[in-house]
Amino acid sequence: MHIKIISIFPEMFYPIINYGITKQAINKKKLQIQLIQLRNFSNNKRKNIDDRPYGGGAGMIFTAPPLKRAIHFSKLKSKTPIKVIYLSPQGKKINQKNIDELMKNHTLILICGRYEGIDERIILTEIDEEWSIGDYVLSGGELAAMVLIDVITRFIPGVIKKKQSLIEESFFHGILDCPHYTRPKKISGIHVPKILLSGNHKKICEWKIQTAIKNTLKKRPDLLKNINYKKITKSKL
Ligand SMILES: NC(=O)c1ccc(NC2CCCC2)nc1
Image (tube, rainbow, N blue to C red; front, side):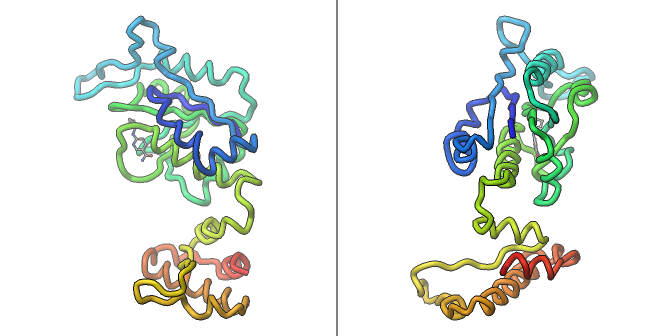
């Protein structure tokens, strides 16, 4: 997967390039991240990339010409299929299920807006899809892009060993994960559930399914309407 990011703050992406699962995926050559500074595509010495909105109103808008140049530059030498994505609160909400649509692409070009957004002509002519990480407004698309990159990276085959992704399987099957415990056996007056120390694999699996459902009922009852017991059972075995 090759992800090209167009932003006026490309340095914001250094943390995901230098730490964690995304760094590992880059080292394993399963992920490539290319940072593109939008200001390099400005047509003036001051490297302006924004202007006041027509029709008045507060704030500034990213102008179309630099974005158009940057997107066309990003598409050069990119392996297809390519998808140009704009991160915005108006976008399609990402979730554990619809992320596999994005996985079908070899190259993703992520556009990170700032201020009040980007010129509509770019959305109409250059953006393939708008995606959102949730119903709230961020000061820029960069944090949303980093979330999207992390979620996508965990889906790249070979990045996370099958067994390691228990949390994914739960959410993928539509419910929350079960509680997790590790040493010490007792802390703050609370013991580790005895069943987890029993070595009885079958009973432990049953406990994981029951507590995952209990967790979901308590924290996200809305998820229980489309539960798939068979898949959950298989995933916990
Ligand atoms: N919920 C989101 O995924 C999201 C994405 C971008 C954004 N802000 C950007 C969009 C245009 C200017 C700042 N806010 C929220």
